[in-house]
Structures are given as C-alpha cells and as structure tokens.
Amino acid sequence: MISILILISELLHRVLLLSGSGLSPWAIQRDPLAVKRAVAEHTGCHGDLLEDDLAPCLRLKSLDQLLSVKVESPRFLPGFAPFVDGTILLNPSTNVPVTSDGSASSTVATSAGFELADFPERDLMFSLTSTESYLDLSAQDLEFGFNESRRDRILRTYVRNSYYYHLNEIFSTLKNEYTDWERPTQNPLSVRDAALDVLSDGHTAAPLIRIGYLHSLRGGKTFFSIFITKLENGIFQW
Image 1 (cartoon, rainbow, N blue to C red):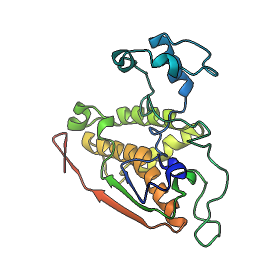
Image 2 (image 1 turned 90 degrees about the vertical axis):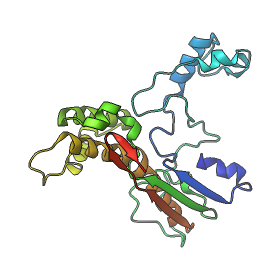
Image 3 (image 1 turned 90 degrees about the horizontal axis):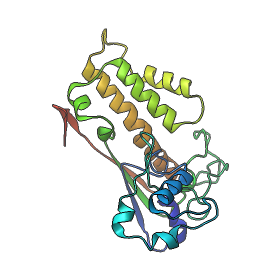
C-alpha cells in the first residue's frame, strides 16, 4: 500500500502501480469485523471481536486450517484485504489537495485519495491494460455477450456494492454514458464491451488515474503506460 511510504520512505525511490491502487473498491476491506468473525468461527479462536487479538490463537493452528478459511464477500469486493486501522492505513483527510506551488486545486472535486498520493519526492509510473474487468465476467459472457437486462443486473450489483449514496443516480449515469446511442440496436457483443468498459473504468482505471493526477499536483514526476488488448472468441489477446 502506498500509505506505508510514510513509514519506510528511506527504502523506496520509485513507485510502480500496475492495474490498481488503494482507491479501488477491491483494495480495502470495508467490513473487517465480518472477516474477523468468519475466521474466529472457522478456527475456534473466539473472543471479543472488538477488543481481543486473534493472532496468538491463530499461531497455534496448522497451515491447512488457516488456508481452509473461506470468507464470502460481495461481488466486486475483497475478502481478505487491508483495512483502515488508524495506524498504517489512516482515515481519509478532509483537507483540500494542495498543488506544488502551495495553492489549492480547483480541479479536484474531493480530497479522496490525497494521502495515497502524498509522495511527490518519489517518481510514480502507473500502468493499465485496455480492459481491466476480464475476470468479472464468465467465459460464456465473454464469448457470446449478453443482453441489456443482464448488463443492468451486473451494473446494479456493482453500484450497490461499491457505493454508499445516490445509487440510482450513479446507475442511471453509467448506463447513459456507456451506451452507444448511435447504434439503432444493441447486439450482445456491444453490450458486453460496454459493461467491460464500465467495470474497468470504475474499479481500476479511474481510481488509478486519480492517484497519478494527485501525485502530479504535488509536483511529483508521474508517468503513464497502457497495454492494449483485444477480445477474440472470448479470449483476450495481447
């Protein structure tokens, strides 16, 4: 995680982010107590979920027991993942991002992710592929596509699990912006491609580009690369 730069800044000189960042919805566990509860129930390491440390008990368990723990997570969200603990990962600040000349930026709507990009003395390169949501769909969906009703179900699930507020407005905006209105009819493959674009942009591309933009605002040297992929017979080719 980028935030550990504060603790180990002497060890890192350059940062390379590949297809993800701490702002992606799959990067942070937003309900760590649920994961702790599942681990406790599976391993028998019971105690106060808020106060007790499970680590001493877990160290007594075999590797097979630990690896067999399964955590059911909502679609598009992580199971085991870092979480905001107030020490290594801090709660987001409400401070307005400041540019390298000390002025506040009027082009950044919120300060979300500001802490994750606060390392202007380190060079940053961030990279993407043209499709970052390949694993979000089944092999059948990738090969044959799907209709608009299925696309809407996928998008509603993504919005519901990734956002807290204005869910209907977000869904309607995504549906409108990622529909090719110049097409008289939508075929299954074009609907599939649009859904892949929404998911790629939402959970990977937009958060990662935001990190790069915030880093450059602080005067850091920021570089970007992209790997182009294409889908042939349901299989991505590089």
